[in-house]
Length: 272
Image 1: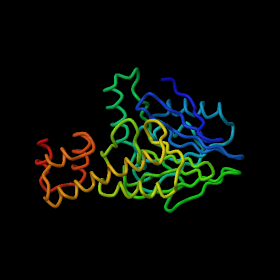
Image 2: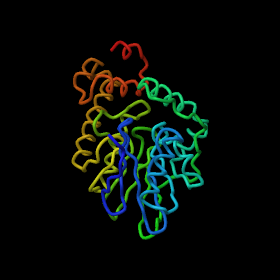
Image 3: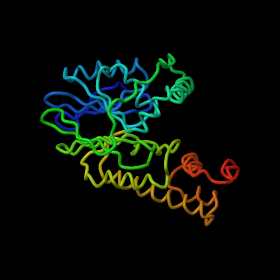
């Protein structure tokens, strides 16, 4: 798959990459443009910046949906742009990026990529989303919002109200199960419900194809089913094997969610 821009609405585009099935976004206004996520390292970020310049020569602002390596380590290519993120994303990146670098390197070598990622200190965001923030691009306002705990404790969604397009980051996943590595499985369904309150026409997941609200609602319901199973395991009303068989997600995804509950007896979970 060759990466290319797809226009979802006037001045609202998504760029899809075969690597990690990643989707990044671009929203243009009369005075500036907003880039949603920056890829996995400065080299990939530079490719994205060049692709943005094919669409617009306007100055860019960056928003990071969260601090996982594939979404944030390309930001240096956009400097001196303003960079928006949640405070906990800022704090995570301010620690120097060791976790992100390790994940990037592990993934790259597992996939036998032709080069290792360029491991440089991550850019620390300088503008924080502590409450819903409107970014004025000139003739178009875009809302940045943190809908609650979900895929991480610092997810940001990007809402273009005039077009009905929502960039959901990894709060929504298409083509694979949601990733619970750093997730809050009991809270995630509520965060997605908050996104659905916006009544989006098109939702761009962090990975996979754009989807509609019906898809998102169905995934939210699956997340809610898993949350109920997690609560039952915590209450010892169900055991792990029962939860695995009843889960709408595969075994590894369900175990990742259960592990995030920090149960008192982790050996029970490691046995499956």
